Image 1 (tube, rainbow, N blue to C red):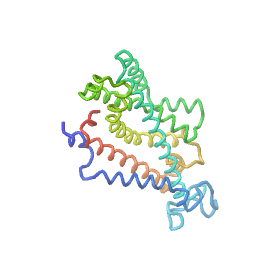
Image 2: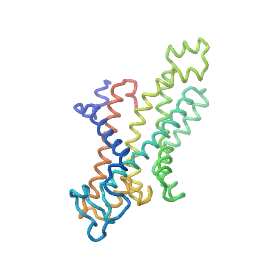
Image 3: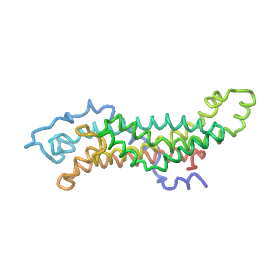
Image 4: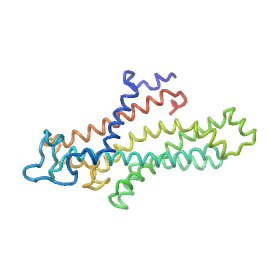
Length: 281
């Protein structure tokens, strides 16, 4: 099946640089939030005069029920939400790639046990695991939540990496290196790991598209980051009490989540479509 057909769900008229530019804008916003925010996101204004103001030239995204500037909270919320996604993906890469490479090069009996463990983790609903941990520990900090999301997302990465390692281990150049007496660790680092990284990076990019909505959903339902820390999910939680008369509270964080997830998916599919070796699920 051709790459164009396998990625047919991605609009052909959207080049890769478009979602890349959108993501770069969000990342730049996260990195510069403390310098470009016009107001302190945690400080309330006049609860009589500044409460629930519609978007204006003073408050670009309006104010919330506590008279806080929504634009400033969106900037810092971008920093928190993308920070959680980045740390989660780092955990997924570290654990998933390590596990997948070891399983792919291990003897058949060890590979079988390792992948059965991965299957068991993947069969357990991820949301259920996260909610159980939150119920046991209480509301989490941004760092703790990111680590938890990463530790529940790595099994999919390990399966993809393990399959790629198996393919590379059967190639002629790996067989030649083995015949020349190269150590197994040297073969893994010099010949196999470089071939695994493209698939791992595409999978990591697509993982962001699942982490951001999950964090937002957990925070929205009170199981994620505790207010007053701003994240896109916390902003949605603030909007839940006034979905109609304060529409701006719902519009801007929802648009940010949608734009980020769509851009991540488009970029990931474009990158995967450029390499035929990454088209297998």
